[in-house]
Image 1 (cartoon, rainbow, N blue to C red):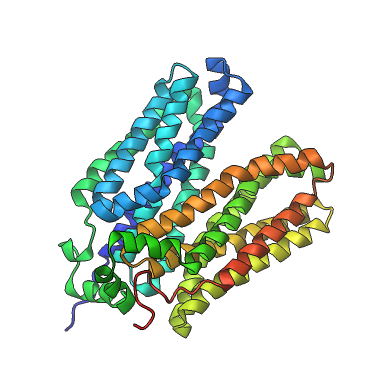
Image 2: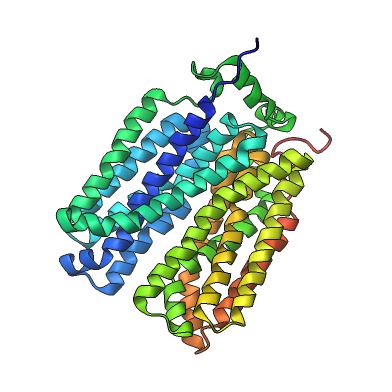
Amino acid sequence: MTARPTTYRYRTLGWLTFAAALAYLCRNAVGVAESTIREDLGLTLEQSGWFMGAFFWTYALFQVPSGWLSQHYGTRIALTGFALAWSVATIGLGVAPGFWLLIVAQLLMGVAQAGIFPASCNSIGHWMPLAQRSLACGILAAGMQVGAITAGALTGELMIPFGWRGVFILYAVPGLLWAATFAARFRDWPEQSPGVNDQELELILAGRGEDELESQHEMSELAAWRAIATSPVIWMLCGQQICRAAGYMFFASWFPTFLQETRGVSVRDSGYLQGLVLTGTLTGAISGGTLTDWIWLKTGNLRLSRSGVGAAFLGGCAVLILCAWFVKSAVLAVVLLTAGAFFAALAGPCAFATTIDIGGTRVPQVFGLMNMSGNFAAAACPVLVGMLFRWTANWNLVLLLFAGVYFTGAICWAFVNPQRTIGVSSNH
């Protein structure tokens, strides 16, 4: 009787998802504790803005360099180093005597966490069959949201007995333990793991396309960067990421204020309604991964399961946001916007999976470039929305703006062809 494939690949996915949750727990705790930190250290509102925003600049800038590190040294070494560094940065937040050490800790946090997702997507490409990649990417994205939601729910409660300094030191401990255990047990390739039997290895290897295997031998470093920089597919992939990230940041930043100004919602209720919308992104990430893989399995059409899904759901999100512009009821508006956030999140896993499909051996760099583009958009979005609010008294215009942003993302998806791997000649 033929042995059944082992399931060690899911354990690998668990390692990566837990790392994502821990990272988002540490980075999102800052927002919860901000007012207490500001009062304790005598900071101004402007200084608080600077130290909270410092994370995003290094996080964006180091996406590509950290992707290069992951590709050259492997996920095991890279992620171990990243986890140790973000844990040290979290301790730095807890012991900071003033403004400048907060800045340094946040900058280090951004550098360390920049490499998590390029490295993780690289490992998903190594460990997951093609038919399971989107679901794996959706689970990874859900880990981010679980960490963010946990930070929001837990940080305030833990600050009562431990204070804000104690909370940050406490949050550093799981990252240190994870790094030590990960370094000892994780393997970059399934071929290296004694826990993977021949049947599981065959299942995983069957998911690596011929283009992916060929790309391992065709390109020099310089040629690879030239191919990445001149690929219209990657330009469009970055374009959709810019649109998705900008839209998400509206929900994560100005959305409560928008509800207060346009629908008469209280400050307290606007926070709960924001949580409802962000929960839509959590469920959308997992559902999108499942749906994308199901379409691939049923049709065998990679472009339909990636570009088709991305274009359809970002377009659907744009329509739902536009519908919210026409309604005055706060409840109905939030229902429509939650559905819109859910649709946008459905398009997330296929973006992650596409970087694996086209990246070949350069997945960390391709993902890093895409994510860097999105993070610059995320950093700029709150500023641009604030400027829009200052220029016009009509806060509802922001819905037209983001309907247009998501529609632009859908157009970008229409030009993404995930069937061409970076570094494989067109006559292959």
